[in-house]
Length: 86
Length: 270
Image (cartoon, rainbow over all chains, first blue to last red):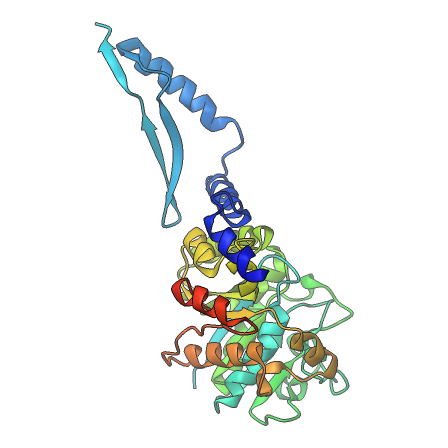
């Protein structure tokens, strides 16, 4: 039975292990930066407002999040542009 | 002589700091090194119990600092290993009884007598922790593969990073590891924890009921054969001495042959 459980566990995409790892990673990113919840969303809105003054954006495909490399966080922002507003 | 002062710390309580301290003390002494174990958990001392030395404690660390006795009078010799000594914590005082500077002095003095000075830190990040790291050159961070423990370990690593001038090296020990649960994807693996914390691994100790038995007997597992956690601690001691000991593969224990084949292709290393 344990064998089957283990075999299926490998195929299951959203295992408890992955959930724990993902939660852990995002929690520590916020912890290390001492970043309060909601602050990043606030920045995203402001940045988007600035960029929108210059370009028309494809708001459905924007990407905005923090990534960790070796205990350092980087801000990854991807704002697909449709056309210039000038 | 100038011995190595190594603090054993974790942030979170109950992850095995004291157990690791006792076992690494015994294991290092078993390799022939002279070792002092310092219990810094003032007010909540337990290292004496794990070592089975609770009946031999006369003086303690605070007595030494407040000059009620000489350092050598407070050191309790181990029952089996003559090159292993314990400096017990005071039980009736609290963390404010010593200062960081006093600890630095004490660690310096101990390192002139012993090759290894292992300081068992209390839980938390307050003064007790600050005192425990004050005199150390190296740190061993203990964590279990649980979220709360990993988070606290990360906080400790941040604090150790901030002391880079004093703490030259810190490494991680993953304790109470359960390869079966990792295999079933119900728990984070050693690799997951290392990836999240970005830290060097010193060793992995599997969850083991023998630890409870050994605590009850007052004989650390690293002093006995035929015990997987004891072997893991002895391996860590050898790595501390600079030997290149590979991380063992515990995953094939207590498993059927089919599982062994499955694990062959996806091993969990301990």
